[in-house]
Amino acid sequence: MKKKVSLLIPVYGVEKYLEVFLENLCLQTLEDIEFIIVNDASPDGSDEIIQRYLKKDNRFVYIKKDINEGLYKARQDAFDKAIGEFVINLDSDDFISPDFIKELYTLAINEKLDIVVSNVELVDEDGKPLKNSKSKRHEEDFVFSKENLLSLLSIPYATWCRMYKRELLIERQYSYDKGELYLTNFHFLEGVKSGLAAAATYYYRIRDNSMSSACNSSKKLQSKLSDESIHKFNQAITAQCVDNDVLPSYRLFNNLSFSKLNFVSCIYGNQSKRYKRLKNTISSEFPASTKYLLSNVSIIPYELAIFILLDKLGLTRLLLFIKSRGIK
Image (cartoon, rainbow, N blue to C red):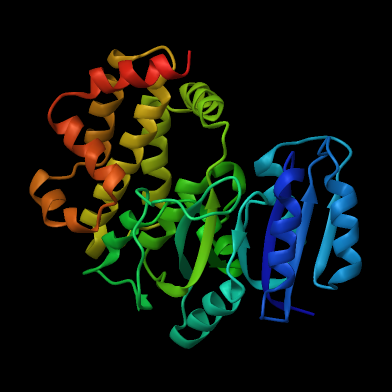
């Protein structure tokens, strides 16, 4: 029997946060949904915590692995088991508002949407609110259109704040190893309708191991991000049929998204020459005029705006030097 929404949830090394996360799932007010938990051979006490919640709420579905196979495989395994009309990926060290799924689903049904986005708030290790420089809060529901599609820049491109129609992902032959940015680009495809549910809030936890995380992220991106991978990404999304009416938005969104990824990839080892080379590739694949950027600057989060300004002033080399010293 089909469910309304399937929540896809990998678990690995998050024992400290897991109980809060699972408790928030139990508070979800939409009943006809499923929580697919994939324990990716977590070496801590996560299994014991999950077992308690399996008895507490019949909406839980549990996949326990004996071998760790990584985040993408865990998400794919959950997706393959899902029977929801819609799916959403969640990270088990964060948490969501009680009406999170209900608000996303209600807007999707009322407006006949393929994708629905939530607001995002930052919290610290203890779940207390932090000043949010990474995204902007929207106070009213809206449907994305040619005129407001670049509002996507005000929200992280991560999939954990997005609900997708499962059939859309099947039809477009999406697999999770293609990454989150690839999936976020579905907003720009012909025939795809999306919107934002303002009353749904995702609480993203900023953890204390940020230095270690930045170092690991930089190293991983160095092995993945290249001139060839950027070109292939553009080819793959274009082959999915980007709507010509939103092509300028598509190009600017990816220009800025890849520029951020490029910067992070170059932090480890202070690779300013690499940054410049990939920056030229990004500009070639996703040309975006400064005039168009300035006309949309009001929707850009503070952190991204500062990065763009420093880049335009030619101060990226200095910024890379400062950041690289922090993760040696």
